[in-house]
Amino acid sequence: MLNNRQERITDMKNAIKLENVTKKYKDFTLGEINLEIPCGFSTALIGSNGSGKTTLLDVMCNICGKNSGKITYFDKYTDVDEPDVRNNIGYCAANNFFPLDWTSKKVAYVMELAFSNFKREKFISLCNKMKIDTPDKRKQKKIMKMSDGNKMRLYLAAILARDSKFLILDEPASALDPLMRDMLCDMFREYLAEKEDRTILFSTHNIADMEFVTDYAVFMAAGKVVEKGFVEELKEKYRLIHGSGETLKSLSQYLISYTANSTMFEGICLTEHSSVFQKLDAAIEIPTLQQLSVGILRKAEKDTTEEE
Amino acid sequence: MKLKRNQIDYASAFKIYCGDGIIKSCLNLIYFYLIFYLPFSIIFSHTSSDSTEINKMSDTFLLLSIQLINIVMTGVTPIDKKQNIFAKFVRTLPNSFEVYKKSYLMKRVLSILCAFIMELVVYILNILGIIPLEIGFKGLVIYLCAIIAASFGVEFTYLIKNQIINCIISVIWIIGLMVTGYALALTVESVFIIIIFIIVSIICFYIGVRTNYYTMKKEWTA
Image (tube, each protein chain N blue to C red):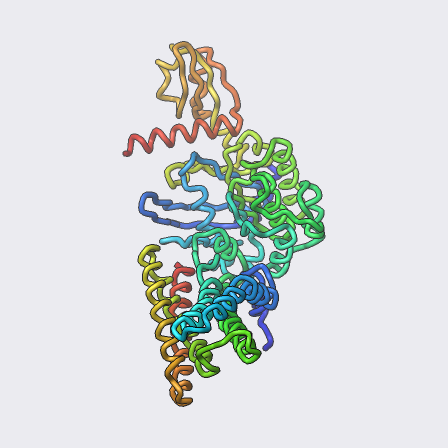
């Protein structure tokens, strides 16, 4: 599977490329960020609260301007306000995105006006699929009266109904129920399968639920990218170790991060160091994305605390 | 005018901005005025017909209501506050600033048009004898000039970030302008002076809109 992907990577372009991008607020600084989001894949942006995921997505879409650096879209454009770029980026914010007094009907109406690639039929079919008001329904419910989950369904339907190349979604899964999350994964897969040059970038805290749909992962902590790579490559790079307290005492320097109680520990280490643990009868496993995330982010958090 | 590729026209920009078409938006505003303000103005003007001073007050109330409704329309709007929900959505659109710019200009021009229609309604009611007005047609024109000029001040108060100071200055500006406008409406008779008022108010309107436009452009591209 990885080989197939690598074949695609050789002639792959980037959906977006960030070079030395920074964004400064009074109490938070993002960057410098150097990042390439590979075209044709689904990328998860993973990080703890306040790590800068939303800021990064906002900077990518120029919802808030950057202080320095360069962003290149589709290997071609440097200005996000180019109509070709805007038409091909489907952005969805985590919270309220459309005015709260709008209805499904008004959303369809405005999206149709604003985006030449918005397909009303597709929007209706997505609304039906996600069990929300269709724009042709007589009695329309205002967004303010919808539950958080239904609001997100409507935003997703509006974004997915466009024939865009690049979806940037800020926590699309957090408000959704488990069934809908599963459906969201299927929709992501369908979206990517429809055309080769399509890309999805989404931030998430629901790593376990979204692992199935994640090809590439970017880990963020304290405004910086701390790790990135294809999930399968990351799983080859790191190993999950379970062992006794005594093993931990003698070999903790090989662990990137760990949690321990009085008798046992669980942590991750680089695959090249896993043989050291093997000699001491520790259990070595391939980590899940969830376990990888916990390990990488814990290490990043520890480093940040030490720096402070 | 033929539009370039991906360019958005004024009407579409306004529809995106307000969620409704131009005519529907204007009718909503005029309907709101007719239902909520005009009946009180009529009652007020009839209960106070014995006293000239109170008549003047009722005139002021009537005209102030037009002013207020105008401020409501030109006042705090979703897109003017960059950080709010709608601004975030608008910024993701192709030609996002174009949408903002055109819808903003449409909105300002329409607010004046609505004020004009409301004054026309008042004038017709005056001719029909339903509303006794102390000021005549010339007075209404002067007052319309004051409303147009009011936007000059409102545009500048947008630039003040502190909400309390913003509010105080806006209230002082509007009341001051209302009193001045009414005093002028009662006293000025010369057509020449009225023409000067019209020109000055249009210049004020232009400067105000231009100032806000450049400020928003600066913020938009920041």
